[in-house]
Amino acid sequence: MEERTRAYLRGRFGDHYRRTEPSLPPGADEREWGYIPWTAGPGTTMVRHSSLLDLGDLGDFLYRERPRHVYFSAGRYADPGASTMDDKEWQRSDLVFDLDADHLPGVDPDVDSYAEMLATCKAELLDLLDLLERDFGFEDATIVFSGGRGYHVHVRDDGVQHLDRDQRREVVDYVRAADLEFDSLVETETVAGIGLKNPTEKRTLPTDGGWGRRVHDHLVSFVDELLALDEATAMERLQEFDGIGSGKAEGALTAARNNRREIDAGNVDVHPAFYQLAKILAADVFEDQTAAVDEPVTTDTHRLIRLPGSLHGGSALRVTRIERDEVDEFDPLVDAVPETFVGHDVTVELREPATVELLDETFTLSAGNVSVPEYVANFLMARGRAEKGKE
Image (cartoon, rainbow, N blue to C red; front, top):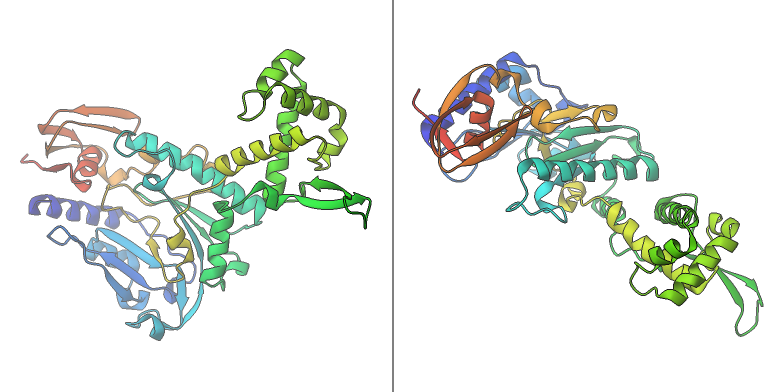
């Protein structure tokens, strides 16, 4: 990034901070604060180990310093401005989840557009929220668009504040269904022949919560779908699964028809083929309902995370807090565009042709000097795809 580009963005970031008031996290004066300035060179320099007392009024600091990135810690400390982590004296930490589109299964940054990557990441966010709310019962969660490639969720329920790294890793493993197998969910009960060499056993999925309930819900839903079909279509549907031929399909279908009450109660042992079907459907649940969160972020009790309301120096978009009932409708390429950058055009020198989707418009641009709305220009410059042109 050339100096004139860096100076322009720094100035316009300052204009944004002059017009907006940052939102402080709970216990702001107990947290460490850090920022990255607009320094020259290919690398970045993090200025950290500051307390809010060191920075002074946050709004004044942001306007004065005009940083490229702004962070606060998930952890709270007795002395957040101390120069070492030990001297800070950790007290507790939020449980933070990070979803980054670049790290999601099925996303190819070289093929998918920025808009497509963010759409995939939002679907992953909805899966994460469902897990946190339904399975853990968390109630105090702040949802944030990171301003870059994904989303953050800050959980601040009292029950998570003192979890250590290993306990936080267990939460991550649950959310990602790490190493989870269908057989480990099934509970086995001896129903006849106790004490005999070959007793009769019944295998049941728990239906009261967790991954057992999720698999059971999906299984029951599939049975509903199956029983609504005529026999020929139902047989074809079952044989779409690997390892289920006509014989197993007939056995699974008959078991589904004749044992509905048992199936609703969680019994997956109504027929060997039905058990195999349940196992196949469980794999789909593990794939579709997990959330590929970044483990190091969640397990790190000292993590610095982006400040909602600040600007992301790699996109010039706003790090945006989202109310829970607004997540479905939230569009980061519209709702995170700073109003400060809307209303006039700027000339940039574009390194190569580019397509940008922002504020419900698609801009298809040729290489060279182009005049575009400033929010497009700042996005391109922040991402290193353009330099500030001469007006």
